[in-house]
Amino acid sequence: MTADSQARQKRGAFSSRKVFILAAIGSAVGLGNIWRFPYIAYENGGGAFLIPYLVAIFVAGIPFLFFDYAIGHRFRGSAPLSFARLSRRAEGLGWWQVLICFVIAVYYAAVIAWALSYTLFSFTKEWGDDPAGFFMDEYLQAGDVGVDLTLVSSVLIPLLIVWIAVIIIMIAGVEKGIGLTAVVGIPVLVVAFVALVIRAVTLPGATVGLEAFFTPDWQALTHVGVWAAAFGHIFFSLSIGFGIMITYSSYVAKDTDMTGSGTVVALSNSSFELLAGIGVFAALGFMAQASGVEVNEVVSSGVGLAFIGFPAIISAAPWGAFLGVLFFGSLVLAGLTSLVSVLEVVISAVRDKFDLTRGVAASVVSIPCAGISVLFFSSTSGLYVLDILDRFINQFGILLVAVVSMLIVVWGVRALPLLSEHINRGAS
Image 1 (cartoon, rainbow, N blue to C red):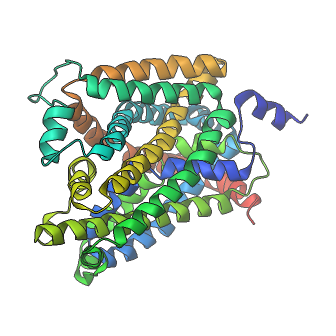
Image 2: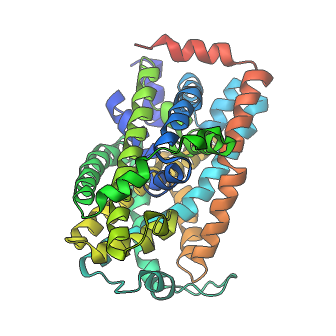
Image 3: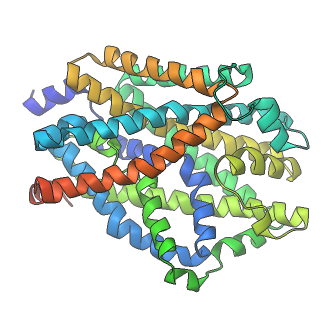
């Protein structure tokens, strides 16, 4: 057994390039692909947005993805350990990324729990004629803004189920836990989402929504904000800059073609986003026509789209229950494969730092994270806490740490030639 094989056996490793690619796609394809990208594209020029979006992928997205891959694959460790092996002065960058991932994991699980509940609600259309009132008042029981830790059983139970599943996956390890989840989950997600899109585009009024989504506003390309939106979205979408791809690439064999793998991941992620845009706007077109209003009056994103807008569509659409199960089931699968990747960044860092076994590291990270998540997000204040944390991460987390990391590695440590040589060594 070679030294590399022994090290991979000790830390854990993906059994093949295929498993790594599926896990990386699972991390990148998350809730934002489904509920964020369609809205951003629509608000920033419609079909014309694809131009800055594609530019952002090839100018920033794929290069930053290669950057993360090179660090993790070359230095064979968690984000803090990889940065420390690059330069002791850079280790803090890795812990910054670990903190970001811990915070994301705490609130990301809550949204998956909501989607799990709504998958079941879709069978009976539990929300009735008032999806907004049901979501806010009956399901979340959202009180006044402020900290109120009164538990809501309708959220507590699915949130516990999510965390139990995640903890089992994380304790199982890289291959038997994360890898197996990706190998099973991603094909199921793709099949379910393709079925969802096919159903959506056959709804009455679907073409109205698709015209709204794809009609280009060429004037938008002259606005700096449109280009900024494209570049900003790519960082969130590809899971770059906050330790995930550094961690995942450290679990891959040394002779793996990382550039080819990265290209497959990036293009697969973008294809899924485009598919999501088609499905979401086809459904919104149906809703607009059924309500006798313009598409821009029913467009929303994020929590509003998923848990208020889509239930209204499900209630009105033929075969609505089928549509709902596919939509919310897709959210659960996409969220789960992303959540395990975020949590793995923290587990890997703690394990490398304190030389813990897999089971111990997974437990000491996952259980406290689950406890904090359950405490805040199964309470009547959950939605407000989620909004605060999400805004903080978006404004001060991911994009900032990605840019700072690049600046320090390129100009501070001057390691770009080393990383470039490594990432291109196995390119095919």
